[in-house]
Image 1 (cartoon, rainbow, N blue to C red):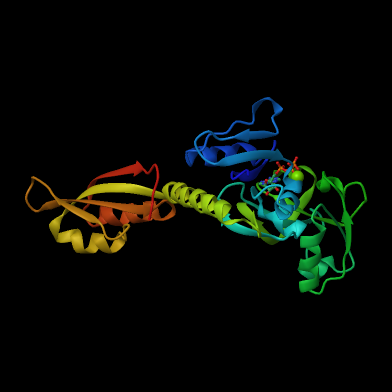
Image 2 (cartoon, helix red, strand yellow; image 1 turned 120 degrees about the horizontal axis):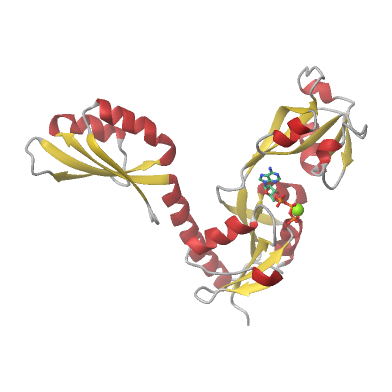
Length: 286
Ligand code: ATP
Ligand code: MG
């Protein structure tokens, strides 16, 4: 019996390198060099299958792979019997409606009775139904953004990250339908031994994600300001306070969220904190 967890990863594309990097940060080394279709990790019971991202939901549903890494957009579009187990925080993008830049946009009703080109007819169809829009969906495999320019459609629905492709094709983004990022998905029928491996993998992924979303900070503060400074610092339990040789001062150690970090530092400086050090965290287990 093969009791390795089979994980499907995009063979080559925007998700490939980041998926392998994530597993590497989890201590799992795999290589997809030389056009290999499979790779086994030596130090973890996992085997990677390198596939096109479109095929991953189906393979996971059928049990050819047990779990997979792909964009949520593909999961929603394919509607297979799989569950999103964990969002992974990379390959973020939005799925938006765009129209020729000279058109006047009047709100969602603009799309009523229009023809929209997309590679994501399921997601678009559900959105239009929800908003009671009657549209004709023109499904095309790729290069969707040229459709209005060649007279194939009035508008498009596609993945956008910076918007530069839209601009280059004379389009403007007018409505975001949904936001997507890479996610770990799993099939519904994993046996106990595979579930145990998945739990172990998830534990590591969460530690890596927490670490990248947080920073360790140390600073010196006058004792009179400690109470106020601590209010700014939730820490993992509560901040560590250590005495300093200089009387009337202490050192404070804590963990802060990357996205709150500049704001907190500014406030701490105003309260008299000095010598603030910010240190990346390698792994963080809560
Ligand atoms: P495959 O050959 O495996 O089918 P693909 O061409 O369908 O690959 P990629 O372009 O590699 O797919 O994109 C993979 C995923 O990356 C998308 O499904 C989406 O979730 C995410 N993504 C993030 N930013 C973008 C972007 N600007 N354009 C397209 N996809 C993006
Ligand atoms: Mg694809």
